[in-house]
View (cartoon, one colour):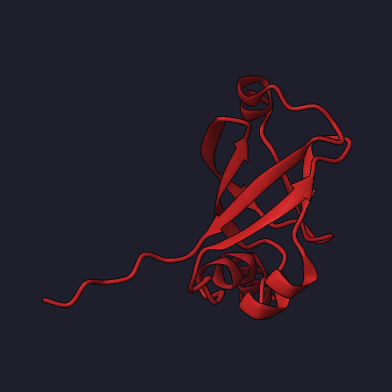
Length: 110
């Protein structure tokens, strides 16, 4: 019994640590929804095999301002924009923003 309980507690951490990372930056336009959420397009999800719960580095560009933050991909494949970012950029629902999901940094060969 105790072994089953300990494995069930470890499994979410195991899934987060061993998810395939995004190889390249993905840039797309999205409409800000009610609750300040942004939908990730299907082609971006398929191309990078995004799974719910994956931690992503995201840049939101709106007008001449931009902001970088970490976000978790929800089960419905949406990203929630933090309230401080919304206030800084002056976002409202139904605004169109440019979203950049950053891939892992490439290692330079010497």
